[in-house]
Length: 213
Image (tube, rainbow, N blue to C red; front, side, top):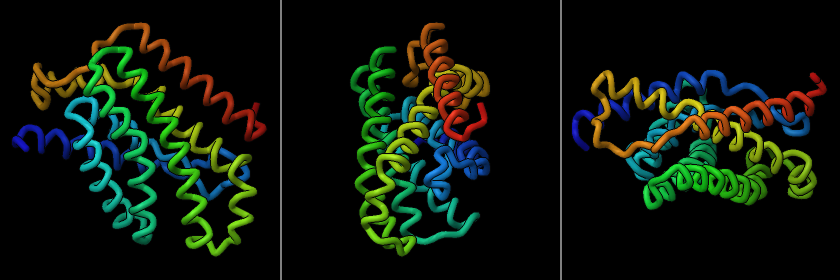
């Protein structure tokens, strides 16, 4: 990596870890141990700027830092990386090959779908080991809990990514951390509105599930 890229990735990792401090909010009442983690927003933005390999590197760095700060096991690192890479690396890889607004949308939607699929499979495998639960109990929680949680989490991260991407990249460019020629999403107000609509809709669904509205 060039020194400027290393610096930028370091800044993005720091931002991701700041957002990770807010990773204590459960989204679905039936699986309160699963909490929303917004750091994937910054990691997918890093992937949009530099490519999917950067998302992978950032995921590894942030997962290790998280267990150093909050504690955890190697299973936490593995599950964290699978979840983040399913969303961020998939979205960044598609955007890298289809460098348009449509490519960004397709990438984020694909990232959401892959996250839901992968985390359904891996929660089925790992949750009984990690929490000592019967596998039948985990299966019973898939549809009412685990699947909607990952759909809401990844969908919310996709919506907020569309809202923040242009502003964050503009700030990094003005600070000379990102070069002008570096990959950048061809942005328009329509994507901001799509991101805002997605974010508000998902927040309303979450509040309704928590019986708050």
